[in-house]
Length: 101
Image 1 (cartoon, rainbow, N blue to C red):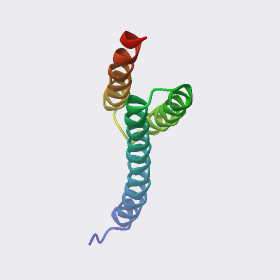
Image 2: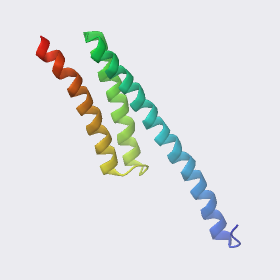
Image 3: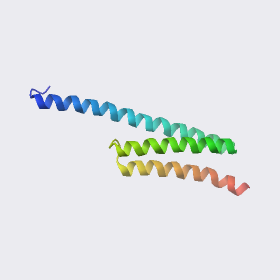
């Protein structure tokens, strides 16, 4: 444990920031998982309702990722990579549907 007053304060601030960052990262993971389950459902049953659900979940996940980047919780390149992978997955599920139609 630190003895200097400013060091003690920095420890408190660092802990507070760690918990805040942890909450953001957890929210990003949760929204990403919800999006992935919606994409899997869309791949199994491509309908306008499931497609709308996928786009809503994608929008929510993108928004949370962008907010995490803005607040410095995740690196901009990491956020871009996450969004790119999400879009690529949806594109791969849509391609077979487009070929059938």
